[in-house]
Length: 357
Image (tube, rainbow, N blue to C red; front, side, top):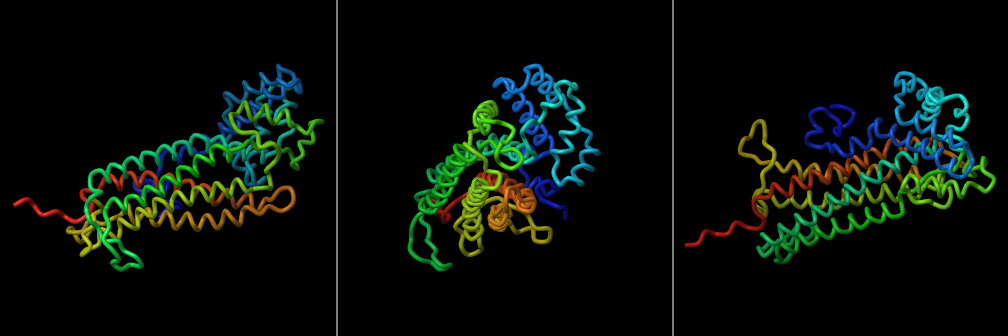
C-alpha cells in the first residue's frame, strides 16, 4: 500500500482522477504562484506604484522560471512553507533594479491561498460538468428502465412497491443539489487572497483596496473586499461542498451494492471478478463510492478543525488545511469518474421480464 490510492501506480487506475492530480501537482502550484507574482507587479505598475520596467522584468523572470527543486525542498523544510525559498530564488533571476519590487506588499499566505483558488477555478468547473453529465446518464436510465416495478426499502425492510424511476429520481436529486452547490462555490467562494503580512496591506496608504481590486481582475478572481487570511469560512464551505458531492455519489453506490445482492435481483451489472470464485461479479465501483463518501466525511471533520485560526495567522490550522483538502479534492474527482463508470456498467434495472410466449 502506498501513501495514497489516488496516485498509486496501480490502484490509481481504479480510484485516481487525472484532472485532480494535475491540479494538485507541484507544477500547477508553481505556475499559479508565479502567475500571482507577475500579476501583482503588473497591477502595481498600472497604478503607478512600481516602475513599468520593473513589472516587465518580473513578468519575464516568472514566465521562464525553473526553481532549484533540491534547494526549494531544503528551504521549505526550514520555513514550513514554499514561498520564502521560491521568492529568494526568483529574486536572483530578476535584474537588480527591478528586484526590490518583487513580492512587494505580499506575504506567503497570499501566494499559497491564491494559487489554490486559481487551480480550483477550472477544476470545480470540470466537476460541475461531470455532475451535469451524470444527471443526463441517470435520466437515460430512467427512460430505459424507469417504468419497471421495484420494492421500496425502508430501514432495510421491504416497504411498498414503487418504480425504478422513483429510485433514480432520488439519485438525480442528490446530483442536482451537488451541482448547484459547486456552482455557488465558483460564483462566490473562489476569491483572491491579498492581505499582506498581518492582513492590513500596510505597504499601501489607501489600505490597498484599489490594488486588490486590480489584481483580482487581472487574475480573474472575485475581489473579496478585504482579507480572509484567518476568516476561513470559505475554506470550510469548500470542504462541505466537496464532501456533499461525494455523499451524493455515495448514495448511488450504497443503493447499487444493496440492489445486486443475491436474492434481490434488482440490478444486473458488469463488475469486478474474484481471484478464487469466478462465478462472482463484485460491485467494486459501488463499494468505492461508499468508501470515498465516508472518507470525505472524515476529512470534513478535519477541515472544520482547521477553520479556527488563532490571531493573525495560524501555522497549525493552515498546515492542517494542506493535509485534508487534497484528500477531499481527490476523493471528489475520483467519485465523479467512478460514478460515470458505474452507471455505464448497468445491464438491467428492475426484475428480469419473462420472455414473450
